Length: 152
Image 1 (cartoon, rainbow, N blue to C red):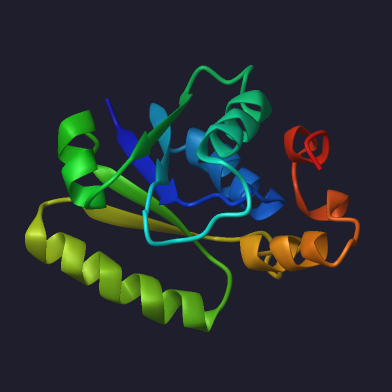
Image 2 (image 1 turned 120 degrees about the vertical axis):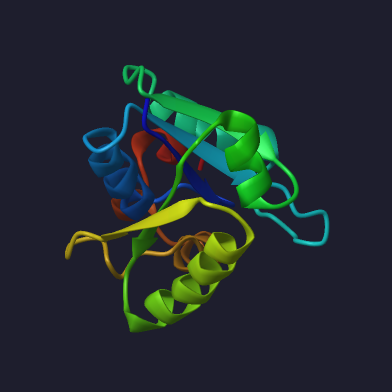
């Protein structure tokens, strides 16, 4: 069974994340969306809300499971018996950042990172942009799944 962990803070999940997860479903038997918990980070949405957004978005997709975790992603991969880490790339800066993490993960474990380029129509969307739109009273509905729109 090919399992992939798709880690992130998902604060909130965006249409870009949605695209990567949907495309990952065709590559893997299971995609585990893993919401990382960092006690030092300030989130806009509560952990329970972020988890619910993703669960509601993929409620009809049995190949997607949503969990939360702390610690190293490679340790989570070992625990879940996942052979792959799934990551989306929007631009060259993402690639450079993700490449360093992928090399580190491969050095520390046998876990391979699989990169998917984001779709052209979602490549400009990031959670930080969505949060900025929301903080300033803008309409974030074009950038997030309906499960998030209902909460905002």
